[in-house]
Length: 339
Ligand code: UD1
Image (cartoon, rainbow, N blue to C red; front, side, top):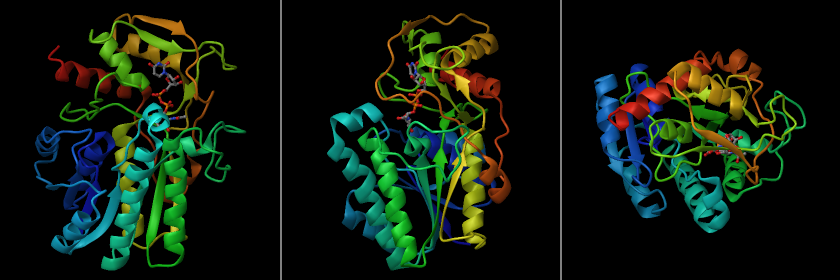
């Protein structure tokens, strides 16, 4: 069996996926440019799986280095492509950086797939492609709406680039549209490590509880939802990681119904911001300092997944609860901060 290349394999979702791939018997080679990760993540991976993944520090924007990589590793059988920039606000301020980081790198990888006959490609997409849904839960055939940020646009364009490539080559691909990943590995060896002030809800909550942030701002309580705060589908990162293994096996076993398939990866449950805050307080038995502030521009009101296709076609289902997820995030935060 050939190796599986995981780009961005030292990042949050990437590192958890590397562990699940190793647990399933795959040999992994990681590419990461360390722009939003660190080499120590490899130690965390090894402590869990007892296997050291191969690692190449490489920036995928460097086309000739990408080529050299594929000359060195001739036995790659599949690629899981995580490496990308993901901060919505930053993408609005610096759109060209996002188009370069997220699109050029994808194109270079797909060119190498064609050249080296690597035909199995999994792509990290996002529920952001749906925009504000017309109906809920949202399934994969819902329309892709005009993106509200360059980041979201790169996910939409990437799906189109992959679709077009699959149409004219032997490439088979699965795009996984993630809902909101949270949580950490239960061993506390790996987890989310946002640089600077977290933009996402759960790391902001855990950093507030840990005393790094004074107060959580809840962005709006006047939305048309039961408690007025926005609703999302929060999925445990280990469940999400496992979906990649199942999707990869589907490609490797040639089980796809078409050359390009799309699956929602979420829990199917919508939770409001205030429900997440309350669940965190309950599971950690402490009060969280928070206040309601204005809405955050660009937020959709409510989005959660119809997971029927992933359940029935992929044979994958999320297993962990919101409480499992929040407790693991908190345990990880405590470990990182020596609390
Ligand atoms: C966003 C993107 C998603 C992207 C993800 C990566 C959209 C619609 N979604 O997810 O595509 O993959 O970022 O980073 O652009 N909240 C607070 N206080 C905070 C932080 C968040 O109240 O300090 C609220 C938000 O208003 C939102 C919810 O918590 O209702 C989740 O926010 P966040 O974790 O940032 O994720 P999304 O915006 O859903």
